[in-house]
Amino acid sequence: MPKSNPSSTSNPQLKILLTEGIHPVAQKKLQDEGYHVDLLTHAPTEDEYIKLLTGYNVLGIRSKSEITRNILESQSHLLGIGAFCIGTNQIDLAAAALCGIPVFNAPYSNTRSVAELVLAEMIILSRQLGDRNSKAHQGEWVKSAEGSKEIRGKTIGIIGYGHIGSQVSVLAEALGMKVIFYDAVKKLSLGNAQSKSTLNALLAEADFVTLHVPETLSTQNMIAAREFEKMKPGSYLINASRGSVVKIEDLVFALQSGHLAGCAIDVFPEEPASNKQKFTTPLQGMKNVILTPHIGGSTEEAQYAIGLEVAESFRKFLQFGTTAWSVNFPQIDLLPPKEGVVRIMNVHSNEPGVLSEINGYISAAKANIQAQHLSTDTQIGYLVVDLEMHQAQTTAEDLVKKITASPKSIKTRIL
Ligand code: NAI
Image (cartoon, rainbow, N blue to C red; front, side):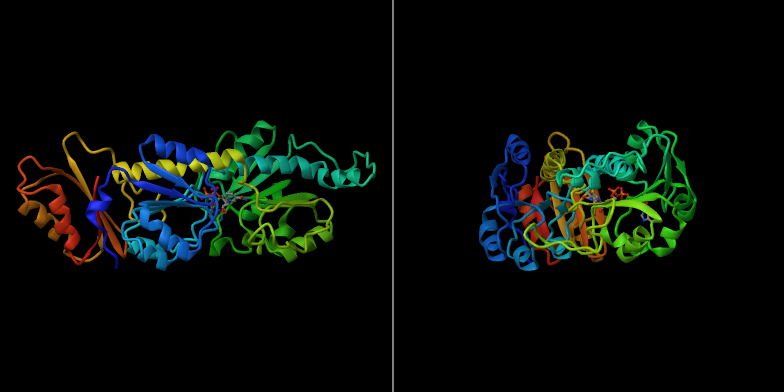
């Protein structure tokens, strides 16, 4: 396991590399904090990263970089990684943790963008705008009120009342809709929204069913033939959550039979890896079916918010040692250290005796512990110690060298 060099990690002019054209707001925010920030527009290869990263302490990527164990183990001075997106499966998270590197992302910066898309889609479906738009472009004039309805007074059924679901709830109510929701855990209803105790109760009542659950074993094919049968005739389905939640063949059947009046699908069981690949789904060409290429969260506002959110996580981590909201690391949320106090951060293997070993070095140095925070997971421990060094018989740097030399220590730095 690589060990960090304490002198490099306590350098105040930390260098940050942002790749893949991350929104410039992140660079500005981090430069304003006094960091040296370099930008790349492309996603470097593994070899490029191994060479490039030797000059940097923090890395920001989006979804196209593959951050492998090889890269991570070759960069003992790397302190943190930010995924300026939602997903983090492009990073070997377990290897990063074992190298003492927390990974941050921005899970909620695009919440509102998804909620707005869902709102738009209800009106689009209700007025058959997708088909009428295509026909008008092809020179066909389809002026008719048949099957077109307002959404005012209709019932929206929200499955998953988390960040996105609850935003949809507030916006739908503002448009005059009745809101019902179903969640696996008890949630506070916003406005006049009513919680339903079962999925079936929601399906039986909703004119629009919209999905906002995560991809888990419990949500896999959560909406399939049995659920479509429970939905009201003439109702609509919207899925901007994850492709695995809806069984597409059963959806096709529910549409073909006329039981469902339409659907809007943003996420698919199989999605192209890039804009250059061809996209196919059995839903193509069907009546009143809106298909979008996983763009629920893709807005300029969301990219801006992601830039700010991850840059803020970097700031709090580099300046205070905070790892709250990290996706792979024991979490500690910290305030700045008090005046005159030295803060030391240590990542170690989670084995018995590490804390007493480190505290032994501290007490031998006659440094006074002003505050101590420890958080662990099954593999690693993250320790933050605030020390008063007035009466100490050694410098903080020497103390860090001692801690670093411990075989159980993975990474140590001074703020
Ligand atoms: P969240 O974690 O805030 O909310 C999810 C909710 O679903 C929670 O309240 C949870 O209790 C509930 N839930 C989990 N399992 C359930 C089950 N079996 N039955 C009923 N409820 C269940 O997540 P957030 O941020 O609201 O995201 C929701 C979904 O939207 C996720 O799948 C996410 O990946 C997706 N998403 C899609 C985007 C797009 O571009 N289309 C962009 C952002 C998120």
